[in-house]
Image (cartoon, rainbow over all chains, first blue to last red; front, side, top):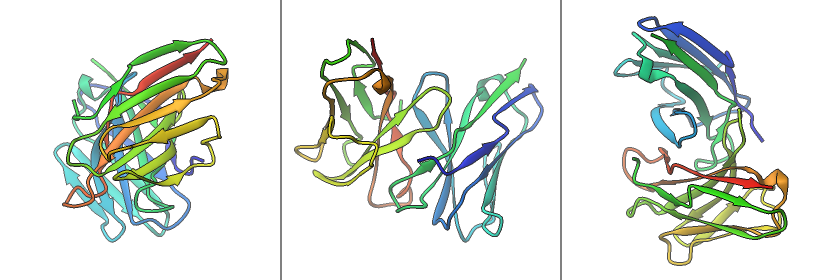
Length: 111
Length: 116
């Protein structure tokens, strides 16, 4: 079953703007990961944040984690057309290998 | 290209037929996962192998589904007596047991199954 939820379901912004997506989950976790999926393709790992971390950066990506609220956010700065994709969060709520996924946020970057 | 390959990329079959998909993980990865993804949804976990041992199976994996990883390298997922509800993208992923990218899963491009 899917226990994570991303918000919003869809987001459309102009190129160059920042995009923020949120993820909520239900139980305690060890790690939370964000993945990107281009249309009809496989998923690509973006970033992992551990439960004892609050913020992590990777290039134009910034991830925050609030374990008290059981939520995470992914910020993409200075968006580009190539960032158009669906973004999923995944948590290891069951075990350290079985990932629980949300339904994703579909991001469209308008040129 | 993540280094994980899946074959075929697309499969169209008639209801009631059997289908088999193959996944070749990254060679040094000992963990292999199968997921199913339907349109507009995130992946749903099906099963997990560590080396050749199948350690976890989802309740989603009915008795019509079987997965193998005979030598701890490639894996196959077979669906018997396919039903229209089996139409989905079947994703394979692999990960390493060691190293700093311990929990990062590398996904193949998927096999899109259409049951008519």
